[in-house]
Length: 599
Image 1 (cartoon, rainbow, N blue to C red):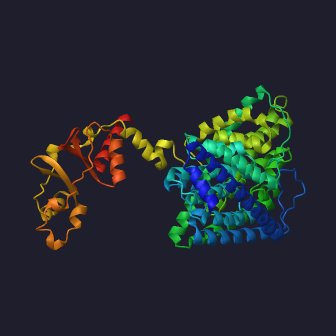
Image 2: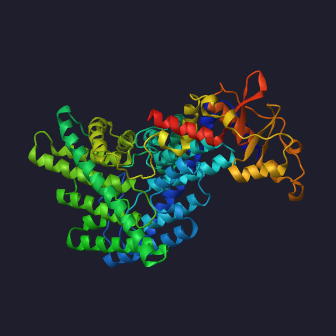
Image 3: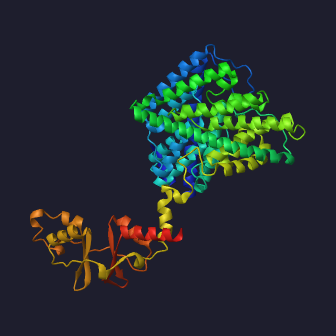
C-alpha cells in the first residue's frame, strides 16, 4: 500500500513525470501480459492441434521444415468446432466485449467509454483467444494482446486514481506496448499507440509514455522468449531501380486489403443477421463459423493443396516464413492468401476471439510473394529470385498498413520483426499507395477520422471554440427574461415553471438583482406551504454571476464547478444591474452555431 501511495503522489507531480510513470507501469503490465498470453497460446496450440489432431504447424523465428500434417483431417473439423463452442460460451456468458479482434474494442473504449475496460475482460480475452487460435481458428495474437494490455492499463489507472484523460492515455499506451512487446517491435508499438486510434491523425501525447512502455514491455517479454526477431529473414539488398515494382505491389495489395475488409465485415453482418432472424443463442455463432472454417480447410487440403488448406489455420506465421525463403510456389502462395481471407472472416467475423493483424500479414505476404514471383518470371534480370522475399515482407507492410490506417507503425514493425531495414524504402512507397487505394476503408471500424471526431476530445475541442465567443453574444437579454420579485409566492413561481418550462428565474427588487430561484429551491418547500411561502425565504442570495465580456469557456467552467444550470449576466462594477441570463443550453447553441460557421 505504501508503494501505491508513493506512486500516486508522484503522479500528482509535473505532467511529464506523470506520463513517464504511466509508461513504466503500463510497460510492466504489457510485458507480463504478453508473456502470460504467449505461454497460454503455445500450450493451447500444442495441446489442441498437436495432441488433438496430430497437426504441428511450422514455427516462425527459425526456418522450420519439420512440421507435420494432421493424422486424420476430420479431427481438424471436430477440434476447431469444439474450440468455437467453448469460445462462444465463455465470451457471450461472461464478457461479450471480448468477441472479435480486440483492438477495435480497445479503440472504442478510448473514444467512447472514457478509457474504461471491465476488469474481467483481459482474463476472458486471454483464455478465449488462446482457445480460438489454439484449436485452429484463423486469428492473430495482436488484438487479444492489445485488449489485455489496454484492460490492465485501465485497471492500473483506476488503482492509481488517474483522471479520465490519463486513463485514456494509459489505455492507448497499453495497446501499443502490448503489441510492441509480443511482436518484439518496440518502436513500431510505441508509434502504433499514437496512430491506431485515428484514420488521419495522431494521439501525440501517447508517444513519450508509449516509447517508455514499449521498451520496458519488450525487455520483459524478450527476457522470457529471447531477443531473436519474430521472423527469420534472408539478407538481401534492394536497388533503386526495383522500387517501381514495389509500388505496383502496393496498389495490388491495397485492392486485396479492400477485399479482406469487405469479406470480414460482410461475414460479420451475415452471421449477426442469421442469429437475429432464427433466434438461435449467439453462444453458438463462433462454433458455426469454426465448423464452416474446418470444412473449407479440409476440402482445400484434400483437393487443392495441403499447405493451402492447413496454412489457413491459426496465425500462419510459420507458412509465411516458408514464403520468405522461396519455399512455396506461386499458385500455393496466391491461393493461401485468398483462403486466409475466407477463414479469418469466418473465424473472427462469426464472433471468435482473436486478432486481425497476423492474418493480415499472412494475406499481404502471400499476395506480395505471388507478385514477386510473377515479376521474377517476366523481369528476371531486374527481379532476381533472391529479391522475391522482399516482396513477401513489403506485401505485409502494404496490405495491413493500408487497411489499419497505421502505415508508419506497421512499416517500422515489419522491419523490426524481420530485423531487415532495407525494407523501409520499398515499404514506404508500397504502403503509401495501398493507403490511398483503401481510402477510408479500415479493418478497425471504431477508428475516427481525427481528434475533432472523437468524443474523447469533444470537451477540449469545444473549449477552444468557446474561448472565441463572449457571453454577451450568447445570453438571453434582460428585456426578454421573465423575472420574479421577493414577494412572489412559491406557488406563483411553480406556475411559471409549469407554464414556460424555464427552471430558474432572477429575483429583482426595484429593478435590482437580489437573488435567483430555481425549481430545486421550490421543490424543497412542503406542498401545503407553497401558497404562503415567499421567494425571499428560499431564494439564493449569494448569486454566482457572469459578465458580458467573459468568454463562454469561463462561463461554462463556473456552471460546472458550482453545479448550477444558469448564470445571471451583470454589469462589471454594478452587479445589481441585470443584463441577461445564460444557461448551458445557450452555450451549446452558440457552440453549434460557431461550428457551422467555421466548417
